[in-house]
Image (tube, rainbow, N blue to C red):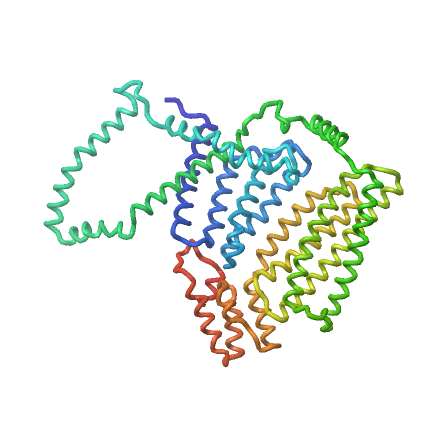
Length: 505
């Protein structure tokens, strides 16, 4: 039989490595909480990925900066995978179940040049969906065909490999009864040998049939999906030329220009009137909110308004106003017909005023929530709201630059900011920050909600121990620590987590 070609050996190795990856995943995750296992599994996936696309990196870029973007997208992938080993925040661990695979798919598609569209374009999302769902299903017969090719054939029953396999099986079948008798006699003759034989059933203690089936199913599913996903990156299915997303760059540009020419546009006078009316209301609203912010800081809240109502209403107003302003901002940038230079200047000035009013409202809402936290304490939801306000503020600052710099890509700026903001929030260690802030509040007011802190992760334990050392009279602090520690499951090394390790020290 002739040796397989190098490329055939590579694809066979790909399937073998995918099998190893499937076995690794089932070992790391079945019956074990996520920990450093997430980073190890991601590292194993990328080992298979770079082996698969070896020799295909570099070359022509369908869009400028594709390689750079592909390598840079590995940074959030690595950082998000590490959060499972560094922190114990269940909220972000759950979110990362979606965010981490999304970043991995984005990065692998970009780096392997499997999309003609830049990663910040809406059409790139369709390429991602195709590679995640369509391609693996399309190429599912490939691994089965490769396994079938590995099996011996029956073309020549006397000389084929299949005949040799049959002979080996026949030998094993004949040896089974003989070994059964011999092992029984040897065990009777020697007690040490008997003790060894008696320990064999103990090897399988604790292994249930259900768990074994679950491990096999997970390993096979991960193997098949990973291999078919890699195969789809190597051999993307050719889409019909008539498909709107398989045009050349010139055809796409021409089609886009036709759409832009034919889309309905608002008259600049109508749009300007709308923006003026809205901005007048927003300016008055912003002035009122800003004055209330400083008034609240001096204890001058409106009569009959409590702190809780003040903060809740402030955030509700923020969400509504932000959504309304976004719905006005994008049409204001793209759906107003061009007019004279003076008209364009007025349009940009009105949009700038819209952005400025929104930022003032964000500052007002941020201050309200700070007042609420000073009165009622810090929680995960409240800190997340703070982060969301800052994120919205950054988006509107970017919108300000986009108003005056028309060549700026707003989608690229927004998606990049969203990825960076999400990674930063993962590394803020919110539970630890909540404990620190509540302890500082305790130093000022003598009030602390230890029951709430006891519901958080082990990230709060170091801060609680410092509190206990500084205030030994606070006996409930130790009970809170014990409660946090009691919620921790016994963990093996794949579930190792720095936060839990520090808590147990």
